[in-house]
Length: 300
Ligand code: UTP
Image (cartoon, rainbow, N blue to C red; front, side, top):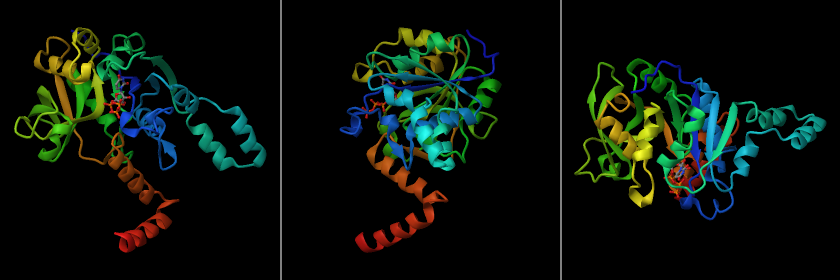
C-alpha cells in the first residue's frame, strides 16, 4: 500500500478524447479549446488547479494537440503587435495563459479511455498522490472544490472523488457512489461505485463529477483493469476496485460538492454555461442580461 506523505503538487488533465458530441467543431480542434465566453474551457481548468496550489500540470493530449500546447505557450508575434499598439489590457490577457503553470504534455496515442489516459501520467506523477481534472466540468471559481479534496486526501489518505447530488431521473448519465457518512458533513465513505445505473439500481443519488485526488496505487489497478464499456479502460472500474479493497491503495472517500458546476461536455449544458457566465461577467453582463431579458420576452 502506498502512503500519502507528500503534499499533492501535480495535476493531470486528460484531453485526448475525441469530443464526438461536438462534431464538426471538434474535427480539427480539441473540444477543450472551445470558448466559454472568451476563454477556452481548458484555461478555466488549469486556473482551478493553480488556485488549489497545483502548478505542475500534465496534460494528456492526442490528435490535434497543437492548439492546446500553443495556448499555454508564448506568442511573441502577437505580443509584439499589441505592445506596439500600446494595448496593455489585451497584452495581459494574451500572457495570462502562458504565465499560469508549469505545463507538461504526454500523448495518449490511441484514445483507449479515461483510465488509459490517467495511466499515461504514471512516469510523470511517480509515487505520490495527484489530482485529475476533466475539462468537461467547469467548477465555478467562487466555489472551490479541489482545495477541499486535497485537504480531505491529506487527512484521510487513499483516494478522494468529487460527488454531486443529482435528480434520480438523471443518475443513469453518471457513475454513482454507494456511500455512508463520516464525521465531516461534506465527506462520505465510498464502498462501491456503479457506472451509469438505472434509477432503480442506483445505490444513491450521488453522481461522480470530474475531479479526483488519487493514490498512485491506482496505476497498478488500471494496468489490471480490463476494457469495459465501449472497449475503453474506465477510471470508474479502477476506483471501484480500490473502494471495494482498501488494502490495494487506502480507502476511497467522496467530497459532496454543493457549489456551481457547468457541464460543458454536453451541447445544451455548454450553451447554458456560456449564458450563465456571460450574465455574471462585470464587463459583458449588464448589456447581455438586458438583451437576454428582451429576447426571452419577445421570442419565447
Ligand atoms: P468523454 O467521455 O467526455 O469522451 O471523456 P470524449 O471523447 O472527450 O467526448 P465525446 O463523448 O466523444 O463527445 C472524458 C474525459 O476523458 C478524456 C477526455 O478528453 C475528457 O476530458 N479522455 C477520454 C481521454 O483523455 N482519453 C480517452 O481515451 C478518453
